View (cartoon, rainbow over the protein chains, first blue to last red):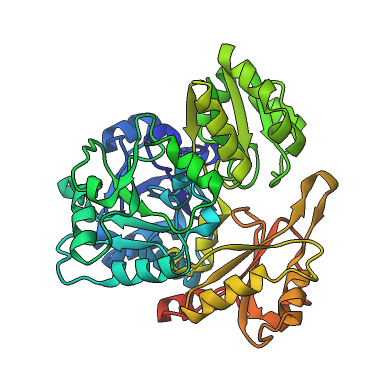
Length: 242
Length: 242
């Protein structure tokens, strides 16, 4: 059996009760550690689970997935993912390979940044396509194209910011706002910077895109939102974070 | 203190460890029971929490929110929401009213149908705006307008289907497919019916929209997806559910 288990957005205790029971029942526990990051270290997770945790980097998940799959044929194996379980294509790929081999699978979902941003007060239904701003973005135009289309239809745009958890490297809201302005987005637009959403010490600031190039955020990961048309209730909600 | 706590998509054990600890520490526990539904009854939740649960219908949350807020000024109060915590506008409204009264708030996120649909294998980033199909939809055109715009930009569309948990009444995938065809959507389009996503016994079927008017689904709640342009990996993933 191969369990896909979401860990949520913050620390060890964001796992669900069902997910924790599953982890405790598994012989091998892999933690996907390249698409996002928890506040809890591998060692803290191991202490919480009372189990050994194997860090699975991109190479392991994409190229050496056979190890995970072969073990899942004989034993109960947990594949842990920060956030919800299908945020990244590689996880879908692992599920497909398991199904092809007739390995039993179970899925235990959890919180994702894609809905946790609901806290800023913009209607989740009114987000258009989500886009990511990568490091080394000088020649990257996709986020701008996505934003322009969303804006044209009065939809909100969520920009996820690149991260390299292994090297503790994160694209910042400041950098992202700089990038957007350089690529021609109006610097006077209202924009929302969010750091470590879902955490007790999350930082949410509503201001102009220009101000976001300088605002101080101290936590990671970060994301940036530019609203489309605002309903008056959304306007009121944004006031809370100004 | 007012805790907003997501319960996830299925049963009592989908709450997070952190959420359960918070519930156990609270004096009053309200369960919002009108925007979605869990498999666990009020009594099962009470047994799991070892606490009394107060059912909060729309009237209580929207008109009598003062009761929740006044209690939160003095005591720890939990407001439980099926799925993630900000799926519905009324929850944002409750948060805003709490903040206006300087009541301390804490947010404990959980899985949402909006990302749990990732399991069907379509990239979450490539969904356009989400829309809902209501009961009594003869003169309702919004879902069609949203779908047409998404389709125009090759984006996937998630249709959430209306539900009235109190009266155990759910709009079905069959009804939704009927509605879409009547409103002019091409019946030959590939469409995906999903019942009770995230559950061990979830039902996912990939077929044509026309076939979805007749396919048998036995569980609730249900939703329907019409894909936009498919990447070959998405095509492969959909094959799993045919």
